Every structure is written in C-alpha cells, then in structure tokens.
Length: 128
Length: 128
Image (cartoon, each protein chain N blue to C red):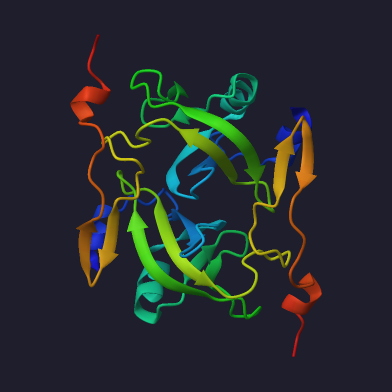
C-alpha cells in the first residue's frame, strides 16, 4: 500500500477527503475524511472506513447503523489530495436515513429538500 | 444568497469543498474549494468559480483554458460542509487535459492510469 500512500497528500490533520459514489448508478452519496489507517483498513477488509472529525475517531461506516459501504474501487485525483471511492452502498449513506447526503438544493434563491428518508433515523441508531 | 451561506460551514481558511459532477452522466469530474465570494459569483454568472489554494486566488474555472463549467444546480450536504455542483463541463475538467481528475485507480496493489487526455495540456494553456 505504500506506493499509494506515497502519492497522497494529507492535510495538516493527516486527513484526505473521500467522495463516495455508488459504482453502478453514479450517484454521489457523501463526502467524508480518511486517514492512512482508514485507507489501509478499507483496502484490507473491502468495507469502507473513515475518520470521523466530529467524534475524533476511526469510523467503520455502517458499524452501528448497518448501512455499510463495500469498496468496489479506490481512485485518486491528479494531485493526490482527493479520493473517489466507488462503492456499493447498503441502504442509506446519510445519517438522516436518506440514500445520499446531498438532499438540499438551492433553487430560485431557496433551499429545497429533494429527497426523503428511506429509513427513519431512529431506526438507524436504535440500541439492540 | 444569505440563507444559503447561513447553512454552510466553512473551514478555518474560509473554504468549503465542492464536488463537480457532470449533470447528465453522473461522472465525478473534480473536487475543488470555494469561498463565499466564489459561491456568490458562481450563482450570479452561472459559470463555476473556485478558490485556488495552490495559487491563493479567486479562480474562474476555464478562464485561461476555455474548459468552463456551467452550473446546473448547487446542492449542499446534510451538515452543510460540502457542496455538490451539478455542472455541464466543456471539454476537460482536469488540468492534464483529461475529462476528469480521477484517472488513477488502485488495482491489485498497483496504480493504474485509466484515462488519457482529450486535449494535450500544452494546448490548454498556450498563450494566444
């Protein structure tokens, strides 16, 4: 994996932005951040892991919600400072229960909600 | 535009990441950064503008290369810290002359180049 890490530019916090895209439909699901450990774990397990900036910890996507992302392919951009993850998303990528996080559009000077939850948020994070 | 800006979280440098996606094919073209001024100018003109971190300046995409991006729709994510720009890209989004910046894939522990330039880079930036 070191030839990959050598090509990447991490920010001052050791993070790199990663765009997750549904591999077969092209839908942009979310953007989150990875560090070297989460890239390594993603490549090793085939399940996408991030670094959660809000919680300040390693984040195995879907571990608590079940809404996992299977890695199909990892790509990097021309200057090595952004990743594109082609994934197979199970259920909802967004913590609001929506398929993707980009459900708010700016149309005619107004915020418009363009998608509804597939899953109620309380169903995503209920304790067993 | 202030209801939009009020919803966005800019980083400590006053920037927000913006993913540009070709509106009709779903191709992820590039990721770059915007500040409040570049968002305002993009919405005003309908042509995408960024903030160039490498050059430290306002960047009217395609101004020198001719490879402009027409804005189709601006969306924000659930926590307002990433933008998704649906665009109509003229020619090549990447400074290498490729259609998109994500032309390097990590396959079987190797870096693989999966796209070739549409336009020679020297053609993109030649002085008139």
